[in-house]
Length: 513
Image (cartoon, rainbow, N blue to C red):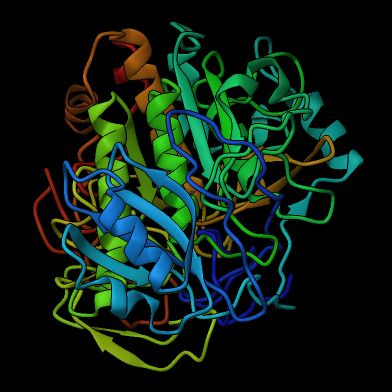
């Protein structure tokens, strides 16, 4: 499998057979045009675009709503409103006026405004594509012969389930169908036999434009688009039905909220739409295995980037106030997110990136570093921090299996790959690795907690998630590839540190085991 250096955007998955901690896999991502409104969002006018149009977010002070003054200012500045989320004071606007954000920032009632992208609509495409390792029919058949009573056919290859005691948890409960998790991602193939039994179409949507499209099937990727969201959905809620794999919480419901364009970008307006949709459709837990494009880190001393942080903070907090736990991947570059500086070579990934040195205390990977969001690091089959996983004392909340190079962390037989097995569109299964894969394990455990404690608030679910995690001490020295050099430094105690946060997620404890 080809390994690519970061040039475009990335979902938080890395390629198999990786030999460099910073290597990333790029998957073709998904899109569908947004047509219908959904939830309580008010559509003020149809957004119009041309070859030079950009998308913007305008953030209004609480209580102002979409005031007539702001609407007139948007019109005068050459903006066309796509949708206004009055619940959180965020307006999505298209404009071909390069000075739109600057001209709108001084309007009374406007807190912040900024461009969500650098490339004109639609975003530019890329040819940097990597694919997951797909299981052959022979591998599927071989795994089936090793399955024991009560196991799905491919479960013997899922070393990640016993790593968090999910196999033992399933002896007590598979989770409640009254609990729904949402995969905010590249789209979910709900026709897959491991996903179909648990899929909730009524709670699914396409948010790519920033305005929810509720057309039936709009949440799906096409046959040429990314398998990422489908893999994640199966890891969480793959049905225990005698077919394929088993999810961490195989009895809960799963919804798909599609937010990635066909060119592979997760833009702010789509992410805002995703969180608001989740908030207004009774989603208990969201899975966020991505960073918001085009900036890996959004610096609050830049007015455009500050506006993006503001918008998504408002949306994620709104979802939590409505009862949703938001869980996000920490990233795959082996960055110390608690350090004093980081060199970001990939931003803006839809323009001309440069090596910029940022202060991670002022520049944020969103949504994972936002207040209230659970930040997840990845571990491999040996229970060590994955070679690629970002880390940082006080930043990482919890860890879970995300896979690693098999040469670094090989699983116990009968499992054969150090990566994570999950469903792929078209009724297939395959391996992927990354903090993208760790996050759904934590989401699954959170769903089991919510199943066990149906009246628990998001704060309580998070408290139980951390308290019940298996405390894991620092790996010191951390020389994952065995070359005699320290690859990362873990700080903190056994009870909380920069590699594993409060510990590794524990599914058995989540169900009272």
